[in-house]
Every structure is written in C-alpha cells, then in structure tokens.
Image 1 (cartoon, rainbow, N blue to C red):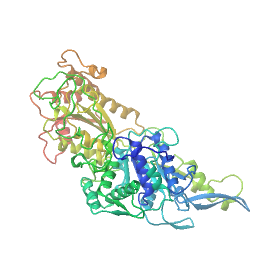
Image 2 (cartoon, rainbow, N blue to C red):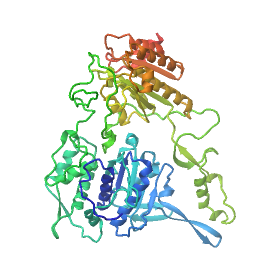
Image 3 (tube, rainbow, N blue to C red):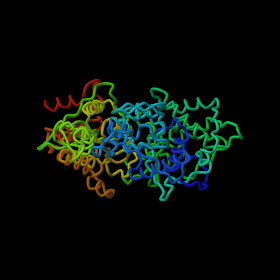
Image 4 (cartoon, rainbow, N blue to C red):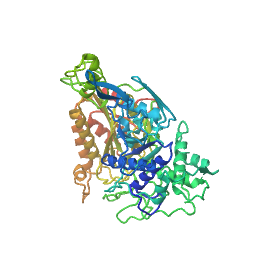
Length: 636
C-alpha cells in the first residue's frame, strides 16, 4: 500500500465506503484494543481485496516491508477445535513417516501480525465462535490441548463479514467482541495494489513504528460526548462506549500535529468523527461541525437529511406535484402513474442492527424444527461442524483421514493408511425450517390502525417454531415501481427488515393481484423445491381488498390508459383461487380485515376465494390468537 499524497478529508463524511473502511482498518492497526472488525453487507466478491488491504496495513504498522505476506487464517462452518489450536506435523522417524502435534494458527506462536478472516459470522461453527469470544479483547490466553501448553497475549486482528438481516442469529456476546462495525453495501474496491485507496501522509506517519508514539490526553468533554452518542443504542455493559472511545482515540492519533514532545488531545470533535465513521449519529441529534473541520463533499448525504421512513417527512413527488403537498388522499381521486424512485442510503447503516430485530425469546422458548425426509436418506442442511460418525451416511472424508493419521504410528507406522470404525467422522448439519409464514401486507389499508397487535400472534408462532418468513409488500411508500409488489425472505422473525416493513408508510397504488401472485409463487416454490419438504405453511393476508392495479399492468409495468374499474379486484380473486388449489392439508390461510368503509364485503370475498376465515383486525381481543379464532369460524 503506497503512501502517495492524497487530499486529506474526514473519513466519516460523504458516501465513500472505501475511505471509511480504510480509516477503520488503520484505526484497528493503531489501537491495540480494536482487534475485531465486523463488516455488514460487504459484497462477497470484494472480501479478498479487503483482507489484502488489512494485511498491508498491519504489515506497515509492524514495520515489515510492503511485500511481506501476513499470515491469514479463514474460519467457516466446518471449523473444529483441531483446526484452531493444534496442527498435525509429519516427520520421518525410525518406523517411517510419523505424525506429531504442534501449535495451531491461533495458539499465539507467531511473532508478527496475523489476520483471522470469517467470511460469514452467522454460519461460523461453535468452536470458531468460542475462539472469538476467548481471544477478542482478551489480555492473555492459555492453551492446554493434546500435550501442548502455551500462554500468550492475543494480538491477531479479526475481520468478519455478516449480512445485516442475519445479526439476530448471532449471540449478542459474540457481536460485542467486535468493537469496529461498518456497513459497506456499496463497496467498490479500486483495481491495482491499493484496492481501498492510498494512505494519506499523516496516516502513513502514524503507522510507521519509527514515529514516536505520542500519548493521547482526553479532554473533559470526551466522555460525555461518548455517552451522548450512545443514548439511542442502550445495551448491557460498556463495550459499545469503550469501542467508540477507542476509535475516537485512534482518530486523534491520525490527526498528528501535536507540539514537539507534547501530548495529543482527544476532544468531543474526535468522538463525533468516530460516530460518523461508523454511521452512529442519528438525524434527531445532529450537531454543527466543529470549527476548522473540512466541509462535506458535494453530493454527500448530510446527517440532517429527512428520513423517508419518519412520519411527517416529505417525499419528493413526480409529475409536477409541488413539494410539501401529499400525493395520496384517501378521499380524493388521483390519476395513477409511475411513482418516483427514491435514492438514498440503505437502512443497513446502523452499526448495531441487532437492536432493531423482531420478537425475541421473552414469551416462549424456541422449539427445534422437526426433520422430515422423503424417499432415500440424504444429507440436508448447511454444514455446521464435524462429530464422530454414528452411521455410514454423510461422512467427512478429510476429517476421517486426519483422525486415522493421528494413530498411524501406533498401528504399524508403514503401509497404507488404516481407518478404524472409531476414526470415522460425519458432518453436523443444521436442520432446515419445515414451516413457512407468508405475510402479505397492504400498506394502503392501514390509515390510523396499528396492525402490530393483530400480527403479533402470527409472528410469535413463526418465532417459536423456527419458521422462515416470506414478506410481500403491496402499496408501500418508496417502492421503485408502485405498480408491482415487493417481496423478501427472512430466516426468522427477528430480521430487521420485518420491523421496517411493518412501519412503512402507504403509497398510492394497490397491486393486490401481483402481491397474491408473488405469494403463491413463493409457496409453490417452497412446497416443490424445498429439500426437506415443509410440513406446514401459513398465509396471512392483511388487506381491505381494494386492488386498483390489474395483474397485466403489474407485469408490464406500464400504467393503464383508461379506468380499471373492477379488473384489479377480479384478478386478485382469480389468483386467490389458484392459491387455494395448493391444498388445505399443508397450507392454512387467513385474511385480516381492517374494517374500512364503504366496501366492507371485499375482504370476505377474498377469504372465500382462498377458502379461509376472516379476522377483524381493529377489534381483535387482547390476548386472543386471531388465527385460532379464524380456524374456528371456518370450521363453523
């Protein structure tokens, strides 16, 4: 990584993910306590460039030549303890080739820098998670394994990646071990030796071990600024506050400019820069930039920009509509047209996405999903580990050979490798969900109605049974094309996207037929192509039945020139009839009626086409499961 002069700027300003990521990696190399870097929504194809850039930064901080290769260790779902702490070594002995044990890659025997890479933290094996909890942020570590004893101070840097919607699947104590968190969904590395850009001269001087390490003195306003920025991100413990303070202290080192022999000063301005670096600052508590700070770049998104998901914020309108005038009025007729495409920062900018997760385990315990096999036995589910084989199905050949090689010297030491039954190892696979919850949310039917209480029993059922969740949104605000429905699939109800979908505002059009068609295709795909075969699916449709976009218009994306009349409603009923044909043995449906006048008959007609019952959304009794009530009404 070269040190060509570049224009120094605040890495927290603007939308340059490469500059922000480079600043975070430099801070991790400078600050001994910032040993873990967690990247949300990092494109997988760019992980190799990021890890090489991190290795170059660590090599420069250690005083090694730029061409030195820093050792890198990759941990994944199949990592076991033997991959981390011990390593088989082959040598020639009196009886031939013999195997002994030596320290593994995480045993602390290396003297130089080291990078531990986790491509997907949500799928990391239990031994890998245990190693991360033990080593990240620890002062000392002790190893006693297979006759090896070692005591060392962990100095390896961890680089992990994770999707923001998978944050709720990771234990909170593991997430807290990563003090540096960044969301980089738009990362675009540059070609060449410097994929994240060249280092500014001040940063190169701070990383140079020949430069005297100047002590950083914290001002009186430093600690209150840290606590102020974390008011909206409360958590158990003080790890977040310490992480923000350490990032701010590293940024103070990058500034330089201290008098000869004098200390550097860490101020509240450095805390603000650290908060902007990890996108921690909220729009409700924006502060003017300190005096002397660089101006934001042209095109950068300011912190005070209106949030499109906040109530009361004005959404830019198209078609010549004046700013500030609502584009949708329930009592007025508005010509249907293509809505504007809103461009903005994705909702993954929060460094703590687990705070916005859905229902948690506060009301009932999780139940392990039941396995279901069809035909001959086969391996299903992602690999999460290796264990001693119980039968001859789904064997792990590499692990079996390594286990047999351990005892080769005791079994003759010559000839072909002998594999005994106790050497056999098999894969451990996570069970795939066999229950599916499909939610169809019609945002135009909400009004002043809070549907969270009505939908809570369905989400609670999905959480307890570990069901996957498919969400189809109709008529939501900010859709790229309001004539079509949007959809996404979540692994569990704690996905932050579900909470964002429940809080989304209404739009102008209601492509109900397209939403039902998407839900039907998702259910057919789950029933036909799921390897384990789902045993139960629940379809919940929340709508008033007023579909004003025909299915042909949704598929073409071109608005109709004339009045649509009942075409959208008739198409929705026809699609509902095709969903009913999937069979009622494995599919249960329910329609939630918001009770909007004057067309109160439309939800009942849709429920009749689906062959299910109707739940009164606004009058659902507290503590009563509306799904149970609808099943009773349908049987009656």
